[in-house]
Length: 201
Image 1 (cartoon, rainbow, N blue to C red):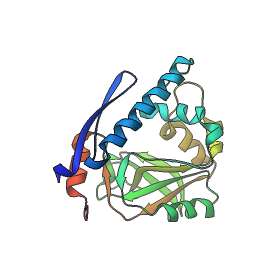
Image 2: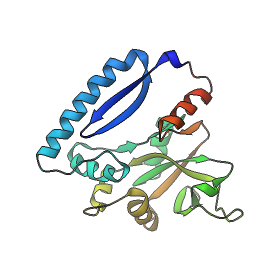
Image 3: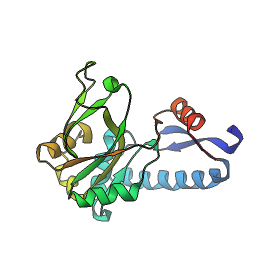
């Protein structure tokens, strides 16, 4: 299994990232990273503040607003029918739709409280027996461009500001899916996901 993957170190701005990718895609990954680095430097040198951490996602979306139609993001490994999720999103006329995955013990996560398919709120790390459901945010969103207008200047996170605002407006929906889901937030978790993912060729 390990021979199928190459471990690559790429540098974006002043930060190094360690990435695992299919061995036959190593050259393409390095070329893409070089292009991304060059573009990020252009933005920075033009006086924009850029970054690759989660808190920078909203700022990056703001810069790209004129290019967006419907936007999605995700940084976990998941088996999900994106077409079905997109159709669900449009059918409900949602401004944002979050893919929800089921976990056996939701006490360590933000847990969705729902009214039908509409998300009312996320309850952070509820005590055992107090969970509103066993559905958690899987890390994949579909958002309409109007979300850009909700971004506050400066520090702004989707989970802390945008999603609660949309929930209060009744415009935040949850799409439960039953496919595999793994957190790949660091190399250890990523390698565990590769080892445990079922039917990985």
